[in-house]
Structures are given as C-alpha cells and as structure tokens.
Image (cartoon, rainbow, N blue to C red):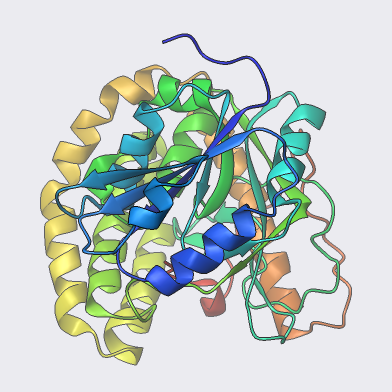
Length: 364
C-alpha cells in the first residue's frame, strides 16, 4: 500500500471499558484544528457500545475478539492505514484543540526527528504535570520527566528527551514500519520505552513539543497505578526491557546500578505497596523469559547504527534530566541550573544515579 505524502494522520485510540472517558476523548478530537485526520477506535475485546461511532464520518471501529494489550491493539490499528503519520492516544486523555497540529508542526520543524511527544497534565485544577517526555536513567527504570511537578512553564519549549510516552504521541508511519511496531510480548507497560530505545539506536530522534498538551487521567483502565495487574507487567517488562535492549557490555558495566534500581523497585512495589505476589510473579516470569527475549532481540541489535558507548551517553543525558526533574519536584520554585537537552545535544554527565524518588511511575 502506497503511503500518503500529505500531512494526513491516523489517530489510534485503544479502548477497553471506560465508555465515559472515551466519549470525552472523542469530543475533544472533534475540536482539533488539524485539517486532515481519521480516528480509529480499537476495541480491545470489550462489550462497549460503540455503534454510534461506527456510523460517524471520520471514525472507524476495529473490534478485537480479546484483550491484546496496548501493544497488540495499537499494532492492529497501525496496520490498517496508510497515512503519513500515526498518532496514539489513550482513551483517558483529553487533548487541547491544537494538540495534533502542534505535534505535526513539531515534526515539520525538526525533520531530524521521527516521533514526537507532548505535555501531559493531570486533571483537577492543581496545575500538575503527568509527564513531559520519558527518560531512562542508569538504573534502567523508565521515568516520566516532570512527573507531578507544578507546571510553571519549565517544559514549554521543544527539546529532545530519550523517549516519549505512547499514551499521547505522533510517529512517522515509516518509523513504525521499520521497527515492526510495538513489541506485543510486552502486552502493556514499558513497550513505549522499548520502541523509543530501538528507534534511537537505529539513529532516529524524537522531539518533545511543549505547545502540544493533553490532560491525562492515568490508570483509568486498571483503576490504580499500584494494582496487581500493573505491578506484574511493569516488573516483568522492566526485566525484559533491559535484557532486550542493553548491550552486554552495558549490562556488565551498569550491573550495580541496575541491581540498585531493581532493589528500589522492590521496595516501592512489594514493600511499600504490599504487592508481594504480583511482584514475585513478575520477577519469576521476567527472569525465566529474559534469555528468550534477549535472543529474539539479537537481529534488532544487529541493525543498530549507534554503539554501546552511544547508548551510555543517551542514558547519562537522560539521567541528568531525571535528576533535574526530581530536584524541581522537591523545590518547585527554585529554578533548575541544569537545562534539559535540546534536539541534537550530547551533554556529558558523570555516571551517577538519582535518589529513590525517581523510581518509575506506572501509568494507564
């Protein structure tokens, strides 16, 4: 199928059960000022009543027989279109009217980038951020940059984080085709950081567009960021993310940092949240499948154009951005002395780790 060369966008919304949130999301999409886009709702094996959307121009519904997770749902939606761009949007997001046009504009302004993320805020009037791009520090734990910071304009400008959250993002379709989409074995959680790493190591860049904004409820489908489902998949996929994507040299070099990260994850999920059983299950299944996942990723790693040292530089840059975010969250009125990396920056930060507060934040 020949790919469109216009500014056309397919907006893919994976949906499971919250019809009320989906209605808010669609209502906001109807107000978008971008001139050319189609909406695809991927019904992930739910019993939701979506017939009214099927009858509406510009919206199609793809029904899956069973829940195939975030990765499986969006991959089905991706395979069904030919637009130049693919936007992914969680059904618990409410985008501002210029959300989509700002993302497209960001990729137009930064032709070196192949995917773009936006500012995600928390609803409720507290002016809190959900995230402003994604990071991965030397402990190997994904972190939402800006998570629960007060939004004081510190993330209003374009910049180049390590990765972006797929809950509200824009991708060149050609990038997703090159990467084979999202890894469906992840099912849910950390699949977007997996894709971000694979893209970055192939030489692609991403851009965070500060003028593009969505309000994100967070954990609307699962009900809580610390439920057994979330902790199991987050724990398992954390092991797989590292096993699949870190070169052997980095696994050895950063082994103490990675072990410390898993120790902090254990303290947060198993001890503080008292979710021992899903944590243990996640560790057992994750470790048992780590060799298989790493072997499956060998061909992917052979296609990388960046080296292990390049990845270490990316992790160091992201580490510093995580540290800056944590400092701002502790002292929101104290300006940061460590600017976030702009597109193309290659800051050199020492090998160091953020403090315990920077343990990752489960979502969706």
